[in-house]
Length: 174
Image (cartoon, rainbow, N blue to C red; front, side, top):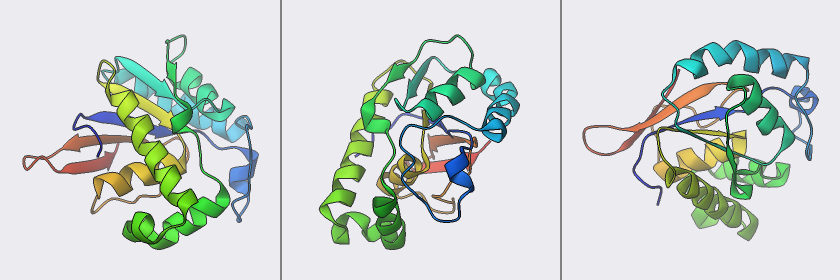
């Protein structure tokens, strides 16, 4: 399971591929102008957070978002925080809570990778900010079984994952 330690998450800013209705493989693409503006707009909020460690996907769009949000701050990169393929996304999101039980081996491998990447991140000094992708966010919500919160997150939205009084996970957009 996911280590019980609160953290923050942000999905990278918009890319030209995010504009398409159909999700396509978009490899290692940079942010577009809108994505850069989104990250700059979110930086005032990010700068107010008590972030000690930043953990980031190795993809350009995530690293560029991190640099615009929190300029000149060191970060750790974990390949486990990289995005899934469109095929995995489609299958995983259609299955929801059954993604691990009924999903293909690719979905199961991706979800395991997300869990490992988040746990690697949460082993660092906190509070932690994870800068990654929509598929990673969905995987986090899956493992935490988050209720009353959308598992699909828009570009450059900051979320706070914390534990309630019962030690169950909760999440909120900031």
